[in-house]
Amino acid sequence: MNGGVRPELRGPRVLLRAPRASDRDDRLAAGRDPEFRRMVGGTRPDPARLPWRKLTAGMREWSCSRLWWETRVMNLDGVCMFVTATADRGVVGLNTRLHFRQKGSRVVAHYSGGAVARGCLAGNVAGATLVFRYVQRETSGDLHAGRSFCDILRTDDGRLRVIEHFRWTTREGEGTNVFDEVID
Image (cartoon, rainbow, N blue to C red; front, side, top):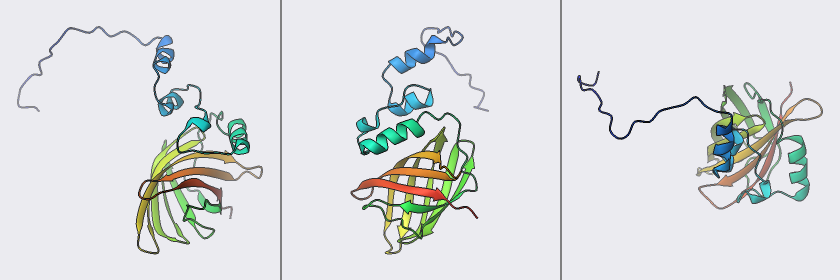
């Protein structure tokens, strides 16, 4: 396999122990980043402190009460969405359609319409939070990319809604878009 050479261990021996309940608290107390805290079940960071995520006080209160404490994983597999609201710096529009696929926590979507000739996003979903990166070719021929942090919820009529907080990485700008599920 490796030419018959046995690996040589150097340094002091380390004895491993079984995990303890306090390990999770110790890791959270170590000052890890907000994404790590979210993954291991720590308290959610204050959205006002996230540098590229500026929400109004009303949106912050609504999001905290409705989304952030939801624990079950949302399933986006096979969901088609349309844009219901877009930011000034956004290029998606009312004609943009997103088609999602999900396997476990991995999410991929292809989208097009309006000023977007073709786009693709890839990321992960955990609970009611979707984090992804995207790249898109616009009808002008320009290629642009960015990253997004999204809240997923169910509307009163049962449709999925994604509230995307995006930040461009290839040009200046950030904003919020809202996508709603298409019901046939």
